[in-house]
Length: 431
Ligand code: ACO
Picture 1: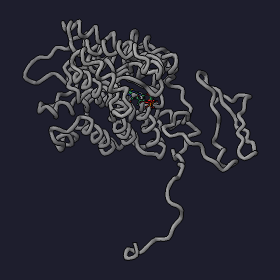
Picture 2: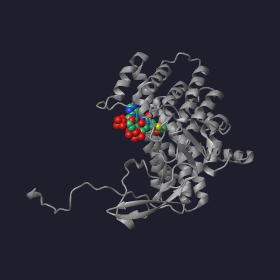
Picture 3: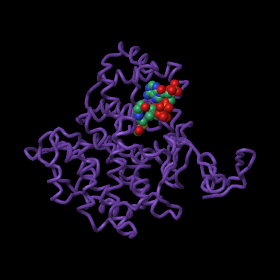
């Protein structure tokens, strides 16, 4: 953490307090309030942590106003265009682009960890068939703690690394099994001769009864979706993973907590909600009605796939995703997809409307991803599990970084108490 010569002065009831400031390599300076309570006896108030830096990090940087996202300094559009998911995983985990032999070794390690303990199959079978695959994933990933004891000692750096490999490698298998179970088909084992994305498509769409050929262009599009979701600095699910980990919880339990958080429609569940909304809108002539509803303060409806806590400009991932949607639909020979048509018209209508531009509400990564995933054959219920498997490397990288951070403390926010004053207990007969 680089100190600046700048300080901030806070004056409370005529008393002034000097607060140190720190400079990041990019982004706004931060005011260090760690000693504020001890010195001034006050807390800060920041619901949703909109102005609070919860940690030091060197992994991902976002400039929300400029619409910039970088991993270890590399812009996301370059990574999505020139790199591939497992290389980005290496970059996120280790901080640099691997040499060819390092990448090959990493890919081999991940590939060799893709199978899950055979007994874990019983876990899947305990769920109802109609369970949401995210419900299954939260349970099964949490249950990994019970199967992989030899990588739960967080004080052992080698065990931390093995847990990271296991999570990155097994998550596609778990997501695919959750899907297969929900449609009543047999589980498909991973294939080590396929790359990460092709293997996931194989585990989702092949059946023992016939040959399945993974289309390399679809595998590339899948890989790009994984890459675009790989990490996003201190978002809600990542902060959940860090908070869970701050108590010393094991990595599988922490990632299960991240999956649970990601499930919500304001976060990872938005891609499912967005596609459902686009289908509900149905035809471009319905768009004005939905725009009016999104603007109506008395209507809880929000334009899903629009707006972001950090991006107050175009989400850079949405640009790549939009291009990918065109490519995938073109490949599949779908040139008149009504949902894509509604999406494009809706985007145009919203960007022409001062309500959205004044509030800086732009399409986010989820706006187009659902269209691609649906065209590939995934049901909407699989959209968030695919997000979870893509984000696993981000959670794991942030978790590893936190554990080697000497500043790490158990997360324990304070509160602005608004409840009753001290009062005496009243016996039941006197209430
Ligand atoms: N449609 C209509 N109005 C919106 C939308 C939207 N999608 N998003 C924000 N607004 C309005 C709010 O009503 C609010 O208006 P007000 O100032 O008049 O009260 C203003 O814009 C600011 O909204 P907040 O909710 O305060 O912004 P916040 O940063 O907390 O929310 C969020 C960000 C949760 C993503 C929000 O924009 C949203 O709900 N979007 C739809 C869900 C979505 O697409 N989520 C995916 C996020 S990306 C991801 O997780 C990968």
